[in-house]
Image 1 (cartoon, rainbow, N blue to C red):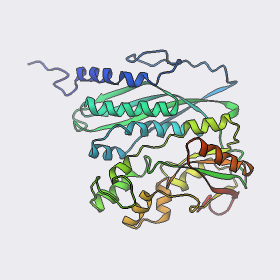
Image 2 (image 1 turned 135 degrees about the horizontal axis):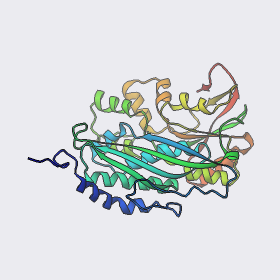
Image 3 (image 1 turned 90 degrees about the horizontal axis):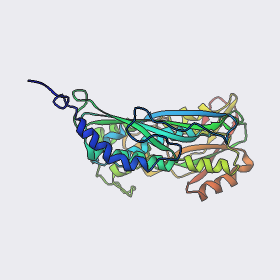
Image 4 (image 1 turned 30 degrees about the vertical axis):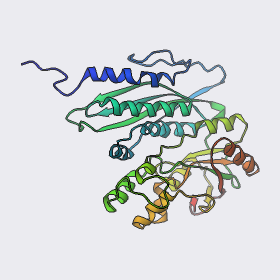
Length: 343
């Protein structure tokens, strides 16, 4: 008896139907720079930047991690794609770069058209929020390697910035202000600990309600990562002097802030200067987690940090608040002390 690819667990017809379903969402992100349609071997994107003297490409890649498990438990897959985009484009914009395009890679045991269509809806939503185009992707069935209902997603983004306008933190000096932009929640980091505490140790259900949370536990955890791209790019266009930017991802405050600091400079953060979302306080109290561990694992309510000259503090905070962010003066830079980050 002969055997087909479908007999082996890969359904090409289902894959083609999936592409048809996601085509409208993908095309909603296209700009005039996208030179190819869906389905080519490679995606073509115009690389002409006449408005820039010396364009520099900035790339980033990331995934969503174990937050996916919450989405699978809740059978809610329409926001996880936003997380995949956010983790890449937020990393790009901290260099002052405008994201240009995004590509996704989804691996699965078997294509579930409804589930994966929801995932791509989220990816397209994230791209529209970031002002970039979803120009390509790959969906691969891995029967025998992954369970039929399992999937994972990763992404890759490219942006561009004029070389003279790269934000690298080199000009940060003592006395500069640190402005924090509020996160939307846990974002996409630390979920191994989140799952361990809430679901392994405490045995909570995703539908569990805490008094301090407006949504159920699962819904709170699935709130997608905030995308800060348009706020930052608008600030730069409005001549706000941004000396440095920090995307608070895995590693929290302690690991991410030093990445932008020049030699001889430390940062003092006042953790009482802004509102910490209840989910972090609940998580910490449920397993008696130390402050150091919390601020090394999670964003603790601050998704992006912005370094500006002290005299621009009020103007910058006012600008970001008027553009839909919640901005706080959370600290300042000092001459180097024993620690790079002082809480």
